[in-house]
Length: 246
Image (cartoon, rainbow, N blue to C red; front, top):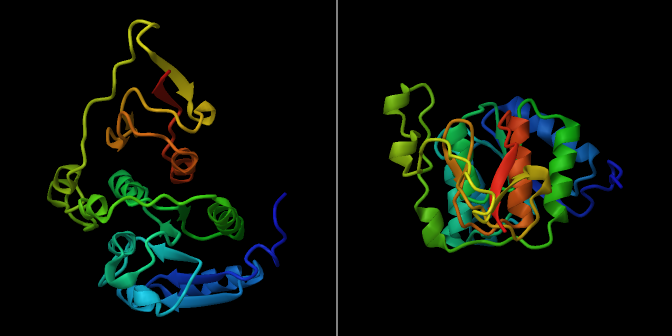
């Protein structure tokens, strides 16, 4: 059952991070309607990290823009996941984006983002994402060294070959789309994403339409990871099926 707007975020405190005043104000109004106990704002990732460092201020979730000055959304997320200056590493982070940039989405996934919301923000999308995030049972966080490998520099407005965000510069693997197995007894089965059970292991890399690997072969697919893959549909990135090993 969908929680009532005035009870969805009862006792929850949310930090909204965006360099656009209108977006911050809109997010604050929507969160207030949804019943948030407290709503705080920051103009960029640097200000947000100052609030988060060492538990200076405690929040239940962060909603942040992707493209911001000083410290962008990915840099902020990387700092959180790495536990920089005492940040809470498992803090839920939802990314706001007006860009359907495949490579940046891949990097957010590599940093264990909790969800995406496409701008302009709607009340329905906000309520749905937050309800899902707070409904998750366990948030598994990997070692800081794994997060340190993710290139979080943006490069909006630059030619593709010069972008700091190109797959080659980011160290993200790219390859041709996989060839389906020829024999049915190859130990692989093609499953619709909606039918992939938690605990499955991909028999091939999971690749988004741009050719970028978003989940590597052999990765244990948790319930949370499967849901993140489903959420990509909101960014017009549709994964119809996954080859898994039985």
